[in-house]
Image 1: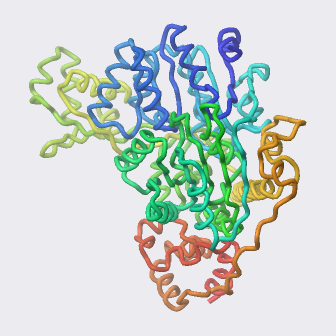
Image 2 (image 1 turned 180 degrees about the horizontal axis):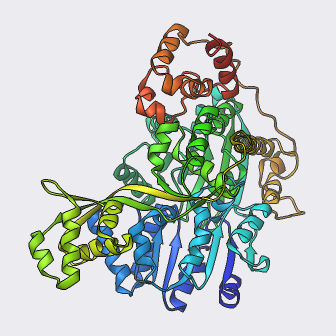
Image 3 (image 1 turned 90 degrees about the vertical axis):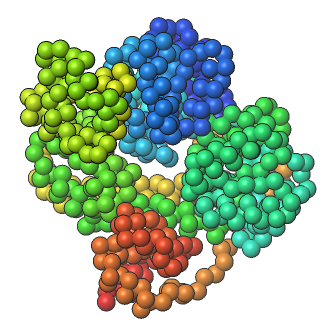
Length: 622
């Protein structure tokens, strides 16, 4: 009730509830209370699907718009939105990059703008997503009457950051406790070579129950799933490398039984409504206490006793650290990106896909770099648009034009005249057409969308362009580069520190449950009595990792040097070479199909810093 009262009285609220704590009710109930649409922004497609099925079963009109919809489903969702009868609309944050969606949603009354996973807006949170920064502006632009931020994992500093970004009064931040009395938190230090046997022993010795086994890598999910299945357990893998329909099949299989086991990367479990998960095992160390808290929170949501066990192995640390180090752009990539942007006119547009490939920076990292430049006051991001529309007439063009009169008929005829006609599709360059016809771009968008709404044409969009304004130029580019480099370095250090906090929880001498909830700002004086520390009464220590031979053990150096000489664009810099050897993908590696090479990932278990140092001295120095 506190959240709904804050929305009613102050028009804004932040709800920090643990996984399964009822966050969805904070916007589902208000959606029925106020006139207009409740717009729910969430990156969790599984959550959207489950909640919409539930709402529809109770007669509440709700739809989602995401990349998994078929053309027919997307069209039906758009029609429901335009009908004015919709109560809840679920979208991913990236949907606000869609020019057509923005044109449609602006015509609607937004009673509530709800943002799930709101911790993603915090630059220094554990899962920063640049697209979330735009949402604060969207709340204002769409004239939303109320706004609600929701998350299950926010430290006190992240709570403060969310409130500042969204303009939520501090007294409207409602933070419930993180303590779960029904979860037995076990941490078991183990050597890498003993981990498979330990997991099998746990599954054999405990009563069967719905189980999740979390792993770090896709290939580990496949291997461990096969191991469990070979031992007679009903197990299947789940990871982002699988086809969408295959992942859906695994999820549905897991949902329909109280004995099945899914061996999954973090791609699994977000937003899935299954209350009777009895066991959550972490085969690998989680990357942060935030991730750990969220993942173990999927157990025992029915209130019954459940066990969450972390098989703590020091050999996992290099792989986790490598993900943090691998995201940092090279010095040359960062310089090229900054010089490109600072040489633009005051208003311009770019293709992030093209820039990602050109400067060998993953798109998420690229958006982060651009967000940094925006936060520093050099850029201002504006609404994206599509560079072109493909139009497929379902009746003759003459018949379409004949449906209009006067100036409107001339406009429709001119639109088709400006389009490049193919065998089936007409391709319309919107920017060029708007300039040639002396028309507002938005009017052309509305015109072609109207044709689609009437069932006269089919539309496809292409070439998304991000618009920017250049606010100011740095006096010295190298100073801006230095600031950006420090920010990425700080992010590296933060991610590594988060991993150290996970290890710290394993070796915690006092109550581990209390230590975990204390991280999120909840203070408890009484030991829980059901964590490993409370049960054993003594501290634990991690076994030393397996000793590894000196670099470059296992690498044919002459073959690698020849490969590097052949693909300088992808492997020329030491950091690029280190990413390749550690199995960390990049746009340049994808472009040249180097992720299929036998040397890709040969040092996957090595520390990135060690591989980078070897590349700098043994490779770059030659």
